[in-house]
Image 1 (cartoon, one colour):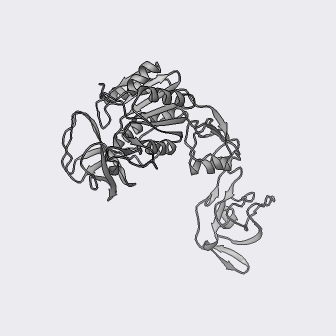
Image 2 (spheres, helix red, strand yellow; image 1 turned 135 degrees about the vertical axis):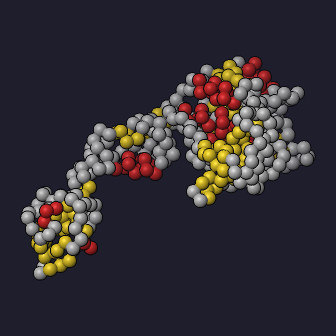
Image 3 (cartoon, one colour; image 1 turned 90 degrees about the horizontal axis):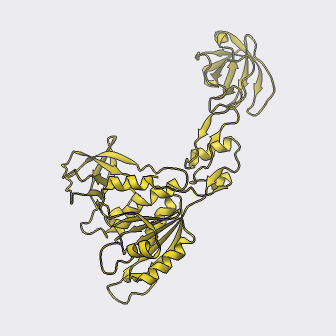
Length: 402
């Protein structure tokens, strides 16, 4: 087996082909990854603009009684100017009149003899949005490979981008293996059977991180069935993910099928991690086969570690796990000399990340309920780290933060 660090280096070194490009209407592009740089084609604003309701004046006239000679509603492009001892009423978004260099808020003036008097002077340029305050012509605003969120939607809308170019979603086929595995909806005939939950969990994770999941259900533990299912999956998917059948048991056929029947190139098989040490990553042409353990918690953690980075790279991006330092609120007992990923609860108290293990059930890596809740994370410890005392700092992966 190789170390966790080595497995990450190998994964990063693998050549990953980007998915194709498509255009989407802006309103449909949320969550997708840009396939082009977004560059401003004009200044915004294009002219000095009022940032609030008030009066446009010359800064040097604040001590004078000012005659209000006109008003400029937002959207009005008429060309008017202020002169000495005059003011023009403006509104949020109005173009600033010629010669005006300062805006005095309405609440800073009072009326005297049908003129206005500034009673609370303001600095020069107050509440005037300069040309290019938001962005300047030629400025790169959003980089290729960025994931489109609400702010990216807004900026592209202000640039009149109707259909941005985005990467197509990578297709991730997910196949559960095991003669004991039942599909959801199937009737149990013995207590030895279990419900197929892994493929649904991993489909949800794939969709959450921008991929298009392909649900393949479950197949029995025999080489013929597994080979046929994987061959079919590879015809349509960029990444094929299997769960179960990668350990060292008599019925663990997946690793043999991937290497011998399919002729895939194994990048690595077996990593010194807990959970999920029997994970395998292989390539077949430009496609990937990632075989994960069968236990629910193990398959979820290893999917996050070894599949999610591939999903991002296929969309021109890099996955950046959100890892923070948190203070332990109770002792932590290290269970092995491996790289461990331990479920935990993380929250903020007095401006500091805190971590504890409330709600955790002790047992095997099949316990998926330890990941329930938006406040759950993974406490990361290296092989060199041992037990930790309450009050010590630890690294925690915020798995629910995209």
